[in-house]
Length: 594
Picture (cartoon, one colour):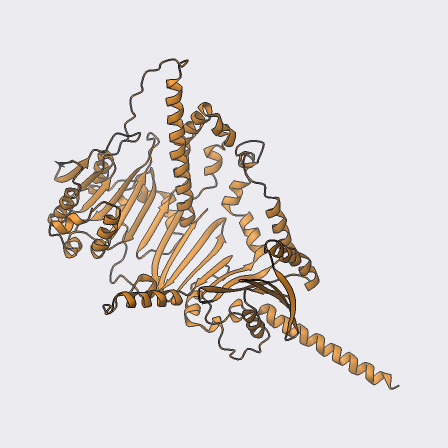
């Protein structure tokens, strides 16, 4: 009979222990990552749901392009297309292991920088038991040990938690489990403090990132369905810059600070929407412009073959000295001519408006695109004086001036090259247009005088513009399908010629297996980017199959490949023509650039 009360007590204790463990685990599982980090956190990267992000990625346009059979054939090593791609077996295995863990709320944070020694903490919530997670994580830990010569491994106890410590001076890696969480840190003390916050026994429970005002301001501009989030607190960097400036200049001017010193926080998030990628960048800082809004008037210069359009507020008058210093370092004193001619920053502000525009057209009949830059003219006389001062500073060049219909044109003939370049500036009493050939500048001037159906009336442009809020100081549009179709038409013949006359090229890239432009472009929608000031900072958003920053990197890479293809094609033609067995061919006349 005595055993019955003991069994009841034991059962009650076990039930209470299970309830307590479940309650604590639930609290830890649902706790926001910001509650696990100290308020002094400098940088945070957060991936809330790996599986959801992977599924959304598999449904986005750029992944569907990657899965096209012709694209797969081109990328498959040893069969067609790119034959020298590295194997990805290790990456595929790691991805499979991550899928087994099904991580939620994975994060990596920089919590401090002491004596130029950064301290990181990170972790994620896993699926299943700790034993299942350890089977995967132990492989990663062993890899770290193998790649760290002289590393020592030991175990320590802290508040009922077992900490695995790997040290190899100056490297340290401390890891542990806490319910459904796995935590890691490059400093033992940081890991112990993280455990204290997770277990709700921190000495100062209010000293967490989610209580920081700058962080709360940043996440107010973050969408709820984000796939990845990044946060940076620039205070530590701006303080160092301020200290350096104080050491260099004993009496800095009031309010004289760098852009970084004005920023309270920087945050970025990415999400997937209807197959597109949507990036949001937030800069918490005071507003720089006052009573000025972007009107995008230069969009009227666009045509049906305009694939790129940009409009932004840029006060060049306040940056003349900085631009001249930069040009001087580059060996070209472009803006020094303004000072020599007595042109001041106030003259520039009076002559031109603040809205800088840029357009790029690529007609199907042209081998390369034409680029235009525009500025609104407020005072034609002062604007003319500034243009004359700028071209007068170019002592090694001869500029010709003409006038047509009351519009002044300034042109300079560049040295002969594969692509003929004739820098031209057109100046009217309403607008300045600069480009790389006189024909495109004159045609744009005609469009500025009379409205014409073009980019502004394009349904593609209108639909893309409606994807984002109206901009106040920056807007960009890229028609990716139009751009790629023109690029393919220009580069494909060059690649085929290079492969025909240079076998080494064909050994790396089989140009005959390149996917057709139609296959690529059906997955390419326009990219649009918009920036505005919203309450307490600047919000820059970008939507498209890839974002504006990603496309800029891609264009730079493809442009370099295009330049390389042109050089290889030119070398192939030269070597073929110089061969003693080659049949002499008439020299083709250069194709004029529209």
